[in-house]
Each structure stands twice: as C-alpha cells, then as structure tokens.
Length: 456
Image (cartoon, rainbow, N blue to C red; front, side, top):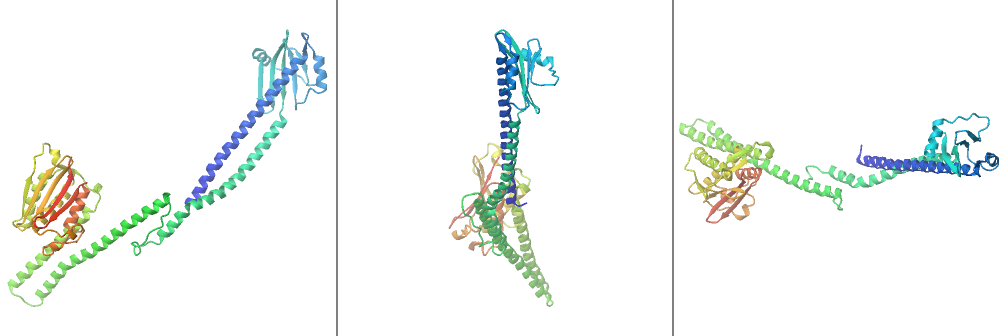
C-alpha cells in the first residue's frame, strides 16, 4: 500500500474513531440526563399526590379520585399506588387489575423513604410521605415515551452525521495525503533518473525546511560521496590495471626475446634476474592491493586486543632488516619511560598495526640516504606518539595533500621503486584504530610521519 493511502486511511480511522467516541458520549449523557429528569418528575408527582391526599390528619382518597378523573394524570402509561403506613392499599388508578406490591419493596421505601427504579419498561419512584401525624407510601411509575423518542431521533441524527463525516474524511484525508506525499513523489521521479553515467552532475531539488527537504539534502550529500567513491574506484582500477600490466608486459617481452634464439648462459642468467625483479615487483603490488582491500573493512570485521606498541616496533625493525636484506635499519629512541604498561598499550589488531609500521619503516629506509629509519616513541595522557623520520628529499608542498591517495607518487619518489599504496594503507589502518596520521616535510630536514594511537 502506498504511503498516501496509508496516511488517508490512518487519518480517516483516527478521526472516525474520535467522532464515534464523541457521538457515543453525547448519546450516553443525553440518556442519563433524560432519566434523571424523568425520575425527578416522578418524585415530584409522588410528593404532590402525598400532599393532596393528606388533609386535617386524614387521608382524603375522594379528592385524589376526583383529581384523577379531571386533570391530574398527564404521564404516558402512568400507574399510581398509595399505601397506608400498615401497607394497606388506599388508592390505585389501575382498574380491573390485581395489584401486588412485594412487601420487601414497601419495607425498603418505608426504611429509606425513597425508591428509584430504571428499566426498559419505564421508570418508577416511591416515597414515604409524612404530613402532620399521617404517613403514606406513594409509588408512581410511567414510561417516558417522548424522551425515548427524542433519544431515538438523536441516535438516527448521530448515525447519519457519522456516515456523512466518514465519507467527507475519506475525501479530505486523501486530498491532504496526496499534497503531503507530492514532494516525495517528485523526489522519487528525480531519483529514478539517476544512474552511474549522470551521478556526478545530478542533484535533487531541496526546497523548504521540512523533513522531506532535509531528506533531499542528505540524499544530495550521499550522491556526492558516491560520486567521489566512484571516481576513486575508477582511478583505482585504472592505476591498478596499469601497475599490473607493466611488470607482466616486461616479463613477457623479456621471455619472448630470450626464447627467440639460442643464448649464452650468462644472458639467460641476466634475463632470469630481470624477470625475478619484475616478479617481486608484481608480488609487492599484489600484496599491497590485498592490504588496501583489507584496510577498507570496518573495525567490526577485526578482532581487537591489547597490543604493546613498543614491542611491536622492535619486532617490525627486525622484520625490515630481514626482508630487505640490506643495510636498512631502524634507530629507536624512547623519550620517556612509562610508569604503567597501559601508556604504551593500544587496543588494536596486531596484524594491521604490523602492516602499518612495516610500511612506514620501509618507506623511511628507502628515502633515507643512509637507509635508516629514525623512530621516536613518546606518549601523553591520551595517545601513543610514534614519529618515523627519513633524511631524504622533502615532499613538495603541492604533493602533501595527495600522498595518502592510492597509487599517487610524489615527484621525490619517481626514481624509487614502489607503487604508491603504502601510505594510503597506513592512513586507513590508523583511522580504523581511532588515531591520526600526519606528515611534516621541510627542505633539508627530511620528512616525518607521526602516528597517534589512543592507549588504554
């Protein structure tokens, strides 16, 4: 069911329920008012009868009979019963009809001096009337014909009004629901025209300050993020394809040349060394792509445990020396000793943190003239601070904002082997751990990468 139909339905049902409630209450209070009014009228009639028949300490039944024949009776289906203090029937207007009034009822009237009865057959009122030294019990009953007719008329009027009101509510509810949903329908029409080809230049109209306008504004923001993600994806695929094609093309061409005719053993050996170097480059690129894909995952995908960062740095320095098989080394310097282990312990994923520091130390070794990564370890009340410095050529200012993008390589890295993936991987790993990675590069002083990781 469409939203506009739901709005119209809910509006109609709620309004109809409210109207029905008001109608029921109106009918109920009208019925209660009629009953109370008619009972008061019967009580007044009973008191009037008592005051008429008692005169000079005697019961004047003759006067009551005379009044009864003239103008006294004006109620529909009225019955009058007058009993003495000894429960003797003194008067009744019911002719040719046996009268039987339960004794317990007369006892009740005599004891409580008042009796009221309400039932579908009519109302009755009884009083114990005393004047001078004479007392009588008077019971008057009648059927409120005109009162019930008025209630029936009121019921019909309310029923007709409810039907008319519900029909009107359906129309009004649908009209307003369509007006309310109209901006959403326009938004849906605009969204339906968006595809991957026009994503970058498409925006939906966002007018007003209501929730729908806010939805449109948020949708435009989402489109911008998607467009940026698509651009990065296209750039990533293009760069990845180029980087993968280069070593493969080099390997294929060298093998084709060497197999074109017979060669001397030293030529075969030289080609094999060159092919091995291209294969190692291809392996590094593949590993970098896998690490980049892994770093794109959410923190919920990884298991985080307490990790001692100082111990991990020592382990990473040893791994760099073994992997590069050169004079590459890491010069560690601790600015102060921790009073507690929690100051140097981070809640993180050890494998990802190891990739982070391997990439930073490896880059520092490659870009340093003496192949030394200078590592400074410090901490404060919130963060563990690790600075990795190289003494090579500084990064141009225009490249500082781009070096964390995948496959981007600054002008100072054109002569050094690499694929431009390491720093982007480092950036994402630090972000996964709730930290920050910054860079500072000055001419003649080298480049410093600073990692801030929250400690326990």
